[in-house]
Image (cartoon, rainbow, N blue to C red; front, side, top):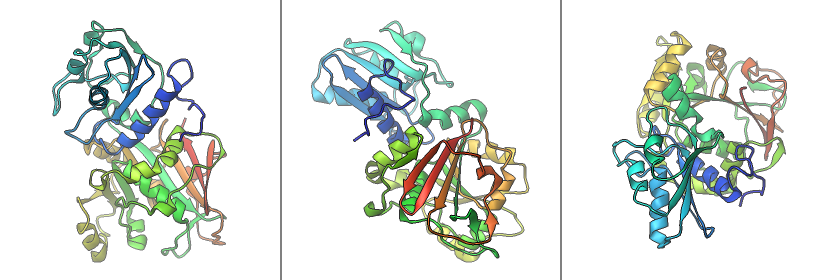
Length: 370
């Protein structure tokens, strides 16, 4: 159950509380699952207080509006309704029929409320002849990666690092040295499942030989929502619906695995063999090229949201790349001390993080760049 607070992204009076909760849940469930399509959520609210909702399905599947309408039809309900959707309904024929055509079949539809215009098409002029259409000036966190990619040709970046209690990310000389606890590890797995790609640098590959794929964490490791300071609708949704995320089909949730490498220092054969045993290819990008080229490359791969997991060299290479809306995540151990080692990259050395959560053996610090 939701903790009872209405998220800041959905102020009372513009979107009813039950609708806001369902939009958050279904947006999160669609994020990662629908890639490269936008993770849209839709809620039908009837005049009798019934709710039918859905999110975008994997490529080739139903759009959020169709999922919600199918649920409405399956219930046998005939009551008039208002439709809330985070992105304006589509009006063009793709792998699926246009949602605007389906909506025209419902005399019960009394109003459409949406948050974002779709920069790739326009349908509202067509739908406004059917019923009143209202744009609510609210931002959906879950859509920002898609909107950035299609409008600016770069994905949203999630920078993530783990550090010791005394602020070091690795010992010197560098060697594999686990820092985070089980709950933090489970959180990172769930985070990967929402991403279009996971990226690491060549040094991280050499030392840690990470798998980079998404693996469903054990249920006893799933983190609980324990905010210590501030609020994040994304984090709150991730924690509240962690078990639902784990029930989704893993095959649709695997991010692209990318290494930013110096071509003269290829990965070890053992790492390559392990990557070949996983679904999908392991991709590489020449780290001697400009970071802007890398961001364009990610956009060409149709990545909406990208998780950058380190290490220090990757963060130095991209330190001038963060923009408004990108996300910084710091996982700091409460227990592990190093005494000395590689210091926390400057990208993560903020004066303050507006959001902090308790993750068992770790603290999770979270901020969106403003």
